[in-house]
Image (cartoon, rainbow, N blue to C red; front, side, top):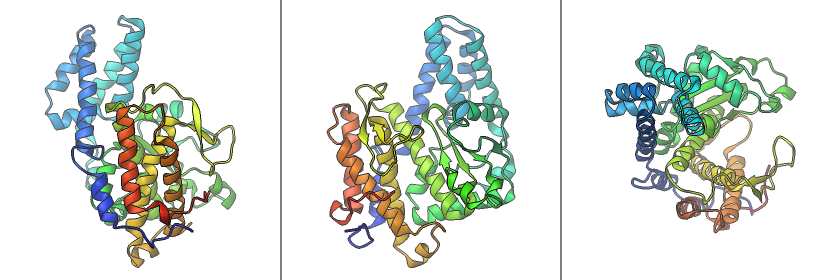
Length: 375
């Protein structure tokens, strides 16, 4: 049996479950907890380091909404993590810690300087292309740019790309009026990798391009490539996919999902992946749970989009919603089975898995889903 739209439930119901208040879907509350967590860490550092005290004082002079936006900027978050780790390691003030707080102070001063032209183009999903930033470009090269044989140059988005992002955000919100804005708010910055090359690339080159990427070390930043720039659906799905990663990173930062997060032992086989040095097909628990979280959200997107023939006709050029739904639902059920009851999960982690599994079973019951793993 294959996963088809027959037997699937109401997408709107899954949307409500994935955005429920006072739970794992309460993005606003979790975002506030992330900001509070970093503010507490800043205050602790300010007891010992004058540079941290200056930043803390300036931050506390802003209103709560502005403080949250500043502290969740990807560069601020990454820099603060590095400063905290360095301070703990050395125990004394050094040039690296001093420089880190200079970066944070600079970002606070720049907070209100996002070009009006970009703010005007921003839809309610609130992830918008940012002007090229030397610091972000350097971080990109350091963390993401060396991953595999992929383009490593950030490009300034042109008007066509800005229009595409705007259309993509609106398309996702058309399908998921509750969930898309909630998910997109978890991402603070979108960068573009070689987006101008898609029109001139050969078919072989296009096949080698990944569509999008993000890492928890640079939480809040997502990157899309030329492959995602081929049409609004591809761009929208890529932005939605990576923003789901950001949503998970926030949950993981504020909940004890694992008994030992540092245990990266690979134990969960993913039969849809071919084994290789760059893309192993045996995953660690945290990577598998990250993927489960994304796949449940993608199933919700595909089901909601397939509820209208008009929407289905507007889906991406490479494959229909049926194929995407089949892939996402099969992988989601497989991962849910593999992760449930895993000894590495802490109490919050077990509850997180059960929450995702309940939503999945509601919208794509296991009886309707093939366990053949489409690649």
